[in-house]
Structures are given as structure tokens and as C-alpha cells.
Amino acid sequence: MKGLTFEALVLDAFDQLAPYYCTELTSTQKTSLSVQVSQEYLAIRTQIGASESRERGSKSERILPPQLTPQALGRFIGQANSCWVLEDFHKIDEPERAKLSQVMKVFMDMADDYSTLKIVAIGAVDTARQVVEYDPEMRNRVAEINVPLMSSDEIEKIIEKGQHLLNVNFGREVISSIASYSSGMASVCHHLCLNACTTKEIYETQEEQVRIDELALQEALSTYLEESSDTLKKAFDIAFKQDRARKYDNKKLIIKALSQFGPEGALRSEIFGKIKVGEPDYPQGNLTIYLEQLCSEQAVPVMRHDTSSGRYAFSDPIFRVFAIAYFSENEPKKFGKRKPKEFEVFFENFKIIFKSDFPIVSPKDST
View 1 (cartoon, rainbow, N blue to C red):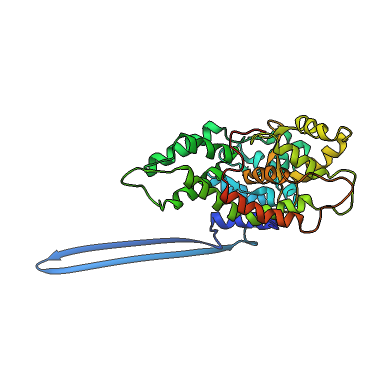
View 2 (cartoon, rainbow, N blue to C red; view 1 turned 180 degrees about the vertical axis):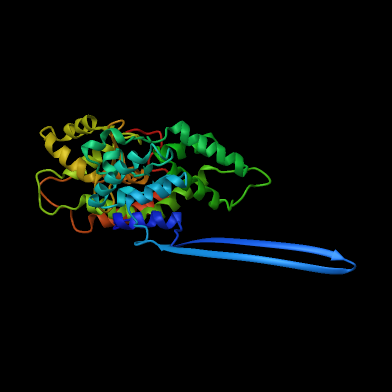
């Protein structure tokens, strides 16, 4: 989580391993000799015994208890045949990430003794360099594994598997619509399917097959909008805000251009081409600056950039639907700020229109 320091991460790893160590060591030597003779004669028993014992002991204590260093952590993890998994590591502050790259070097050097010893850093970004601020000498010690967005076919397979397990039938049209609205994100697919099932009061496998129709999907999308409304409003309110009047309403121009493409998004050159249709003199430098800002807004980024394909897309499918609706009624303005309450009024109207006139845009509509 945010604000977690490197030292806290190391302590947490030790805590999960829960290792024990010896605080005191005692050594004892003992020698004994015993002789016993028994003789029986005429019902008379005679017993003679002799015994000798010598004892010597020593006691040792550690000068210091084991230190909780990365080297010690590496030995403990290696001896436990485990690896260190750091989830959502992109939330850690950059100075703390740089320290982790040094630990990676230590673990790499110890890998000859412990084959399972490794650090798996999981981050919701596109490259390993964005996850771990590693130095140049770590270039050959880090394996980058890119996880691309899912295709529509892969999303549809999730739904098909789920409907088989729950004994429900979404139907080909509804499955295609959900896959399109999901925009390659499995989490959105799960969310919409869950909403559709709860609409039909389905919480477990059904004895008789139940059909999930378009009406259920409409209610599922409405629920999704309600749950996302605060995030949606905040994201676009920040994106549309202008501190001072500029020649171009840059962020609105970019968002409008992107909304004219399909759910898979568009390349930078394609977005620039759309903007140039309405603004022939629009400079490329502005597009570069504001594209980066829209993808890295600290609060809620409106867009995301897939470095593997080079495409830009909306970070949430509902953002695209909202942008299409908004720019069907509002145009980016030159030389001025938006009117007070303009965005707020439209946002409230959008929620009403979305529920009563489903769908605002056909999932297959790429314009």
C-alpha cells in the first residue's frame, strides 16, 4: 500500500516466515561406570555395586541476535524453498523501490545456493522499470513479463465457463455486448456478470437453467454506473478543469478524439489525425504533453497506455460511454473556460439518460 517503506517490507517478509533462532546453547559431558554382581547361594542373595560419575558443562550465548538484513532474509527464504512476492508494488514510493533493486542483486548472488530464491514484483504498469527503479547493472538480472489486455474471445470464454458452472444462459448477443463493454479487462467482465446475476437473484448454481437477457444486462450496466459514478465524476472533473484560459482545450480535444475510436483505443498518430480534422493547426507537442497527463493523473487517470501495442484507451469502459454522450452535446471551446455547473448538470442528466435509453452506443459501434 502507499507509504510503505522498504524497511517495513523487509520486516513483513521476516514476519511471514516466522523463523525461530537459538538464544542459548548448552553443552554437557557425562561419564559413568557401574559394576554389579549378583550371587545366590542357599537362598542367600549377595549384591555388590560400584559406580563412578564425572560431569562437565559449558554454556554459550549469541553476542547479538540475528540481524534482520536482506542477506539474512535471503537465507531464510531460500532455506524455506520459497520466493518473495510483492503485490501492487507500483504503490511504493520511488526512493523505496530503488532500495529493492539492491536486494535483487543480493538475491541473485545467493541463487546458486538456493534455486527457488527470487523476488516477484507485481505492478499495474506496463514495464518493469516502472515497477522497480532498478539501476543499469540490474538490466540483465530482471525478467520483464508483460500481461496484455485480454481479447474479446478470451473475455467471452470467461462468461461461457461461468454460465456453465452456474447453469445460466447469457445468450450470444449479451455475451458479445459484455465482452465489448469490458474493453479487455477481466475485472469489468466479472463485475457486469455479477451484477446481471444478482439482478436475477442468482447467487449459486441453479437447478434449472435461467436465461440472462438484455434487460438484465441493462440493469447490470446501470448498477455499474451507480457504483462508478463518484469515480467517473472525479476523473472527468479533473480532466476538464482548466487553471487558466488557453488557445486549445487540450484534454477535451484528446478525450473527444479517443471516444471516436472503438473500445480497443487508438495509436497516438490516429488520435492526432482526428484532432487535426477539427483543429488543422493543432501542435503535436500539445498532444504529447496532455496525453501523458491524462494517463498519469494522480487521482483517477482517464486514459491508459498499452506500451506493448502503443495504443491509448479509456482506463474504464464507462469512461468511453460517458465521453461519447458528453461530446454529442458539448464541443471543446477555444479561448475560455467552461460555464459554471456545465459539467455537473450534464453528469446528472447522463445518469438518467443511461438508465432510460440503454444502450447509448451500440457495443459494436466504433465511431
